Image (tube, rainbow, N blue to C red; front, side):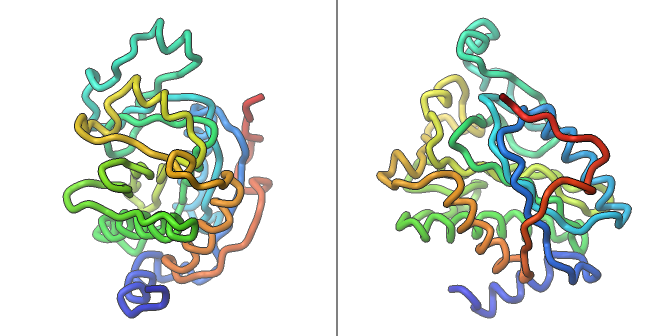
Length: 248
């Protein structure tokens, strides 16, 4: 329930004690994965140095598979030729989790947030899950978490994938991928999140008529609840030295 004591306790313990300023929300548009990864590293370094506030970057990616630190290479089912024919890139990255897909129609959120300590990592992941459960509920979808599995599910199908990294200075990167109008056919080229006996879904496949922009608005409100803060719209100007390369 919004405003419940458990939510208030969680919100009060996630962000660094000195982080009383609003979180900046930036929508970067359609960004190639390599450029977004470079952007995250730059933002993490500046946040760790106290040069910028906490920021949540939302964007979409051109089609790409990413593999986390625990990924099994055999879970990428399509070979290089098949991926190239479909315009899908492949990147090995430094987040937790296995293999997943990003593409247009999927809302990706990369919170660059300084936590109160590394012991808060599990609570942070649980908070990301609740952000997405509540966002789905805003569109009439009864999503849930499953004990022992990360992410947000509708029945046996995953709606939201989550994989994070926390630096030695306690700053988060990577984050969540919420399927809105995602082309689910591209998930056939992988074993999503390394779980062979479960599927994937999107708001569209569940019969919801919504676009990424509308879902982003609702998700921003849910982030404000779970982080216990105000969120203000901003741009990347002044946050990073070089402009971000966007996809055409």
